[in-house]
Length: 123
Image (cartoon, rainbow, N blue to C red; front, side, top):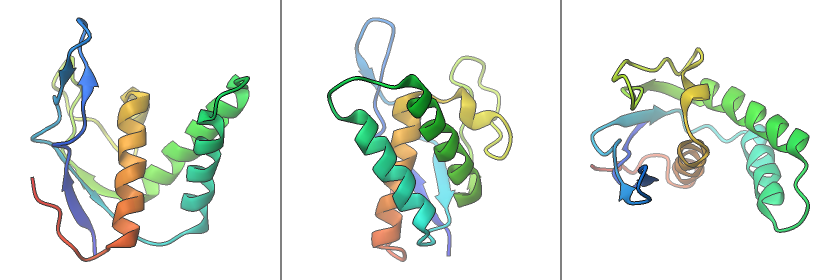
């Protein structure tokens, strides 16, 4: 059963470096199915985040995998483009409009939903 999660704890930095929560009233419904691809993608992103030399090809590949994975796991959402207010299409190019922080927040929510699939997450 899909789980609706509000983005109240997703913080982004504004142009002045201040933390904001521009998606606090926005939500995403995730399909919490345990899949090896989720675990593999999460592990790859964690390895890339470790200190050391960064292979940008690996980073790009990992985010390609993450976006492909999220497209399959997002059932519905009401996220909008933060500049224009236009709805973002989670099945189209909308995920490519998100920041790294937003994508990682979505992955973290998916991982949490896999651990407790039937517990509601309130705003």
